[in-house]
Image 1: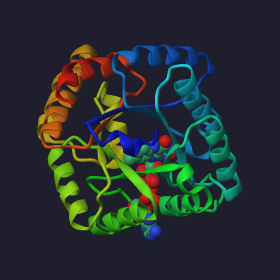
Image 2: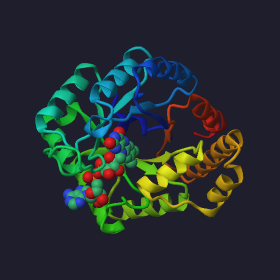
Image 3: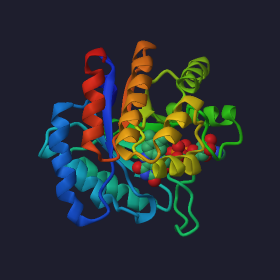
Length: 286
Ligand code: FAD
């Protein structure tokens, strides 16, 4: 099913997982998929490690398992950086063979060690997919409520986002954010420039302080005072920090749903405990 169809009647609730680094952890991720049955997510997306940090076979294998062994709708991420057109062809043909047509088309993070590929930006990948696969693939793209960290300006980033939608992205998933006001401002700006596709809000429940440091370094998202206070109060108490992280995410989601968000995309970090706790707290409001 195309993810776009999911938005017609409800607030979409989707999950994101990443392929485990070690083969040995595959069993544990499959157990996690079993636990997700309680949530019955509208779809589960599987990340792709650009440049082979986890290869597409892991992404494809996991989406295959999600669809065929567990009966979920799946989305495969595809980061084009360092890839040639022939690589993309091989990957997408394989995804279609296993029945996965929903693709989150990304550029991926720039890195010095990657070979020169055929795609400079996500929009190039989207145009390529549309030209070669037409409606056989449903394309999703990433968006950044506080602007992408390399963007020249917020407006420039929005302009490039519009290009991705005009090229064929039918739904957007946002980077995580901790201040809902940034998301509302972003949504309004999208509306003003004619971005009319569903925008899912990316929510990451914070489970430990290392994760926060990494997030800030990688994406430069704003950390509101209310959030940093919680983090500093519970930094030495992992269970309390986890519970406070869950409560903060639930609070964000309740507000977003009340304000008519199209969907919530939960970055689960492969943690079924946190995902089920959050779902339990919000399932009646979706
Ligand atoms: P782009 O849309 O290409 O944007 C990147 C930058 O270039 C932006 O600053 C934009 O303003 C600018 N830009 C865009 N088009 C043009 C143009 N034509 N000319 C000039 N400038 C332009 N990474 C992974 O490696 N694997 C994953 O699985 C993964 N999953 C993700 C899921 C989500 C929901 C999100 C939000 C991000 C994900 N990422 C993933 C990270 C993502 O790859 C990085 O944020 C990357 O830096 C940008 O990717 P993009 O697709 O948004 O790139």
